[in-house]
Image 1 (tube, rainbow, N blue to C red):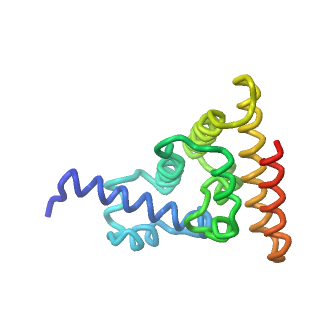
Image 2: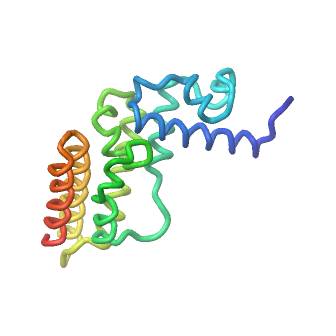
Length: 179
């Protein structure tokens, strides 16, 4: 039975969503194509109708997960939600950059390019509401704040001490508020 273009697009969307969730939760190497397809409710055989390889899936998943959101970002409000313990604990639904950034270093050039494009877009979006009198000052504040937020989430996730994890999130938020 032939699948319509609309259904193919919906299937691809489901694959990318499930791949993103699984990759963030377990990492690129720990997730198989068969697991992604099963999670998307599709057969393993249909994978190659959408992607050339697992490397292609990884790059496309990063591009999808890091696509710009709608609307403006208010840096202070964004930091509040980003540095919340619930966001930090949500490995499968949380930040793609914090969850997969270090792993992306060892991926294909296409995956690295997708991560780089996502970083550029996030810095651009955060720069619009970042403090500063000039564009350069706003960009510096956006980069520093984004780096601090991602780093805080990574470090908080690494710690098996919940108090220390929460302190890292809270102190980073306070630092951003003061900056």
